[in-house]
Image 1 (cartoon, one colour):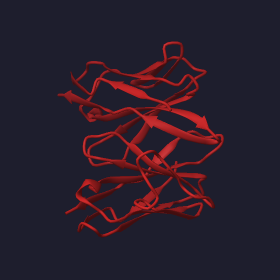
Image 2: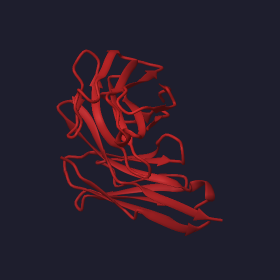
Image 3: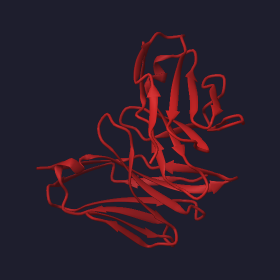
Image 4: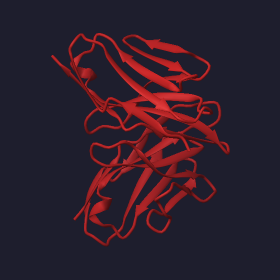
Length: 114
Length: 115
């Protein structure tokens, strides 16, 4: 099955700096890569996603890049703010027998210091 | 988006008892997932539930311990049976609207503590 590795497990930055979280996946058939943000005590929420036919996608201060050849994708947050502090999960999804089963990374705890 | 509610939001249970968690969605969805998230950990898929068929369990999870019902396209239940302290965790349901859409939405979770 699919295996998703996520690094780093913890990332501490100063407000205004950029943050980058990286994930690798094992199954070249994976074709959809979402990123979720989970604030303390809350549910995971989708913040951005990318499909395998696209190399990069941006949404304001957030961007995601995908390298299909190397099988890795990254989340980039620019001009970080304290409210960006949360746990971020990457995921890779593959269609299997008509079902879409995502595999999640272990998560990155992002701490933005004011 | 999908509005998902779960009941109960939290519970404290005694060892050996069972708890049924309910998940209600505001619209019909094809697939519903049940996840477990232990403190500080990632999301572990327990099973996938499609309406009208048996749930599909992931490795390490069995129907006798985590029976699931999916009576219609907007509702599902997960039962945690014969609980032990190791079952203490957050249980989340999640939905995927199916073909043509990719976004997965999560419920607010049920925080379970087993004494």
